[in-house]
Length: 191
Image 1 (cartoon, helix red, strand yellow):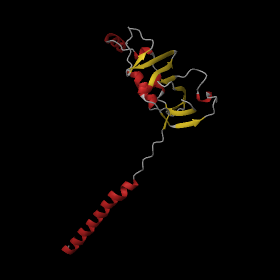
Image 2 (cartoon, helix red, strand yellow):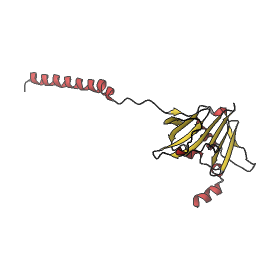
Image 3 (cartoon, helix red, strand yellow):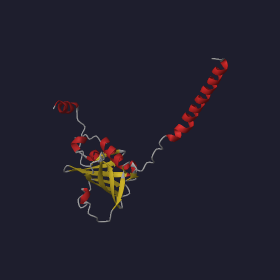
Image 4 (spheres, one colour):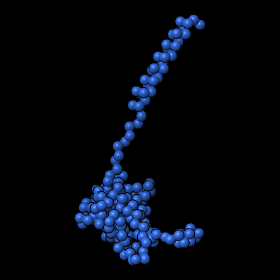
């Protein structure tokens, strides 16, 4: 092979390499899938510092924690109670950042039993802000696809479809919030 042919082949290879580089750096990024915009719908809008108290109902218990000096204090606590209030703070945060997949407009006074919600009962969760405004939630049925219905009220009638991991954050009894001493913790671990 002559050196002329080798030179032509080398030039052709360089041109192909340049074309491939152009395709990789210019065309390929345009082919990448454009991320979909966040379509989540915020359910509530309040700050942790604005909370006066939170009440939730679970398994026959009704627990209320009042916010005092950046901590949540159980309103029925005695001197002997040692309650870990951080879980309550997480509950409030879960509500503050709660977002829905879907919002369903409903008529005022609509029957929501088809969603597993009974508005005639007290709400499952109630957050009262320092200004007296209230945010209420009634948990409804699961849809079967990692979602469940909640009826949220803070001045308007809306039904929301949220991820099903929201409700378990509020499935705590007061005993679940008590700080266990080491002997109790060891006894429960061995049981």
